[in-house]
Length: 226
Ligand SMILES: [Zn+2]
Image 1: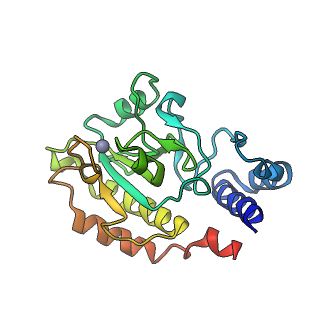
Image 2: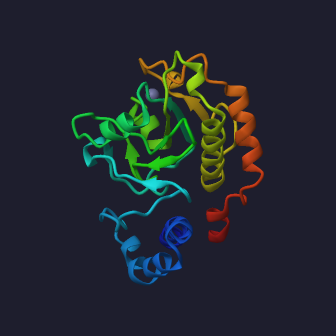
């Protein structure tokens, strides 16, 4: 049953992330109070301020002008991760994504010094990050603090933290860890952006993602539906 699948998968996606990030109370509140929301197509879904999709991420909302609210993965399947480099420091990246005039934002921003992750757009929403509508709709964007011509910006902490995030996304949406599904912004059709640039170590990154993926329970949200 399509409608029941929608309800249970959404509840699991949000409840699962919320349970880890905010404690059990948030998930229970969601399950008891919000289940009927999912029966209503086209209705804005309830958002809980501060909730994140990835445990450990800190929520700093992007401007609503830099995203489109959606109901992924029910309206658009998620099967891509787009890797970016900010071409700025971390604070500036967060600041511009909060600026309604910037016209762009990514779901996540990873800090170089310590691998800290800030989430700015919920995964169910479409972030304006890839410069390609279809890719925006199907992907989750991860920004990395640094400059494409400064390889020293790409720290071990950042690679490792980002790889754990990517592995978690691959597991939750059940798509493979490979370079078809994890792409650089430069590889998005029609883009004029060059990030993450020639110094981004794809072999190292993909190896880290693959290793982290083994530690993530397989496709945990979907399994519970079936
Ligand atoms: Zn980019």
